[in-house]
Image (cartoon, rainbow, N blue to C red; front, side):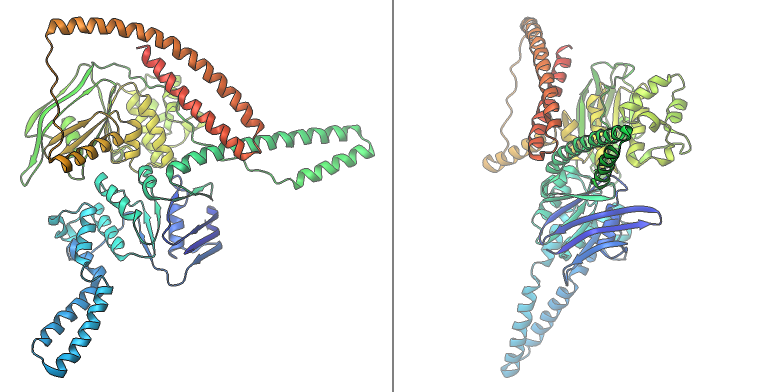
Length: 636
């Protein structure tokens, strides 16, 4: 064990941030701290690094353990270059190398006993240099900088010319090269593109010491983390596994705790009713029995009501106006600046109802492409054509504009004065603003809540084609899940830029990869894109080139029409049979789910059995949701 926390407490005045936080960290363990924004994750990091005091509990840190801490928006300053800043990590190595070079120069002019004496000293210094990995430090620097997305040219760039995000990447690189015994990283992926995040995952997976990371990147956490510490309601819960394991176990645990709480409340009410009845008899024995039950009730360890899970959206969002089938067509698009060609030969098409993700390395021009599509920036070549009745709604997490003094309801009502109260409430409910929540002042909303409100405003308008630029930036995990559900249930068309691979997996039907040479289309989600690119890479290694794609044989127009008619008739017959079969399956599954819910309630005190029932119920619910979608799709 290298680090331990037991019942750590922290308050700022009357504001309690952490109440009971406990966990252990083993050497070489990879751990994540998760929780909604404001749960106290960064405060915990500051306590662990002794930058902030704690009010109660115990904190154990193994003797002589080194810690490296990457804060959010960490900055480096100085007059040197990126590479020179990295060299500062190896100053003792560089000094040792300089000493060796000086000794080599002196030995060239010596002989005899004096030469032998200096040679012995040189051998000792060289052994020390090898222990310091002196011969490999330059390649380590180059490898880390390349992994974090710095080209050879950018490695020689002065620090003063870097953006805030680039300076944070430099700071991350320095920490990785220092190799502290405990590496604490607060949102390390915020300024990295997908390629750099993938590199960092592999680096941290093989990191020789312990890592604690705060991150909302679920795909990232799945890849290398082996323990999750969740901060919720000022307390901690430890899950031994990656993010997917944590999400599954959290749902099971929450449902079991809810049942246990409900059962205890029923028992309390039953005992209170018995006590009242006994007292109503107004006899000495019955009063004593009532008092005995009251004492037992007082001694009962009361369960706390589990924190409510974020409500899930169940409304399907339908644009006011339906677009034509062809939503967007882009051909031969090219953009260049005086000193650089950003991209060229960009071609792609988007059809009604598609959910499409654009990915690519930082600096390739994804946001610039969006501005060109929106007519906000010129291009050097190419054509952009929007289809019939296409109304664009543009969402940029960084450019939200609200009147902070208004409530949620007022903001929507003032923007769309012709909408009824019921219409406004329906759309707000779709984004999990229920009941009195709609009267919250905007100034009191979190970043995730503001993002959901902005999307609601866009969807209340005429927009039937959403263009979203990094919509998950700064959102906590619960807000990301709500956004994913909103997009999946949206009946319009969605095109978005994202580096959130988990988000892309859950929402994208098509992935467009932007590069300097054009756009490549993959008809699937992010994992499908990875599978295809990995297969192409293996084919390249085996054969030198990718497997050639066979061109489809052309079919005459008349033959094609006849084939289309026959295929259509066959499809209609299959659809009718399929609908009837799906309806029967839906009815059976709904009955099974109802039966399992009764079994779970009966087994609330048996965690293992309740878990098994929950997993079976979860599988049936997933199957039911799938069947519902199939039934809806079959209806046309």
